[in-house]
Image (cartoon, rainbow, N blue to C red):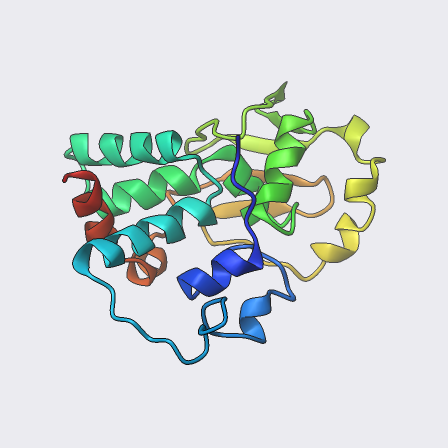
Length: 202
């Protein structure tokens, strides 16, 4: 069963992970609960590791087993640093790329689009959100799906949208292409990835 991201989780973790424009964290930038605004207990090392793990896991909408697999694979490979490998593999998920292209307002919405068969990868329908893309792969919204309500306002939504530099977006045909590896520097700086690796190496 997939975890539903709520604004309460955003407030508990101290960052917006729900993707909603009106996230409650903006109005109440403190933990939920009766003592949330005034209570400031320092986290133990384990508590900090857990918090960092939860941030990334919930941001990408993963179950615990899924996230653990990403960590294990990143640590096992030796080609690039573990932190970079974690982020790169998460960013190359199909649901994340649909979100990054601006086709969905949230990763959860992108996941639904993929689940419902609205997305083609290299001209073939793929309905697996975790499907890993590679450089050169092309994605497009299935022409037969464009009349669905979920895409009703897409033309206006992406009109002024600029995707990350590692993605190419055709706003006329609602297509995208992976033209480089994800730029992970900014994302790596946002999270303590070494802390996450340490959490799972206990």
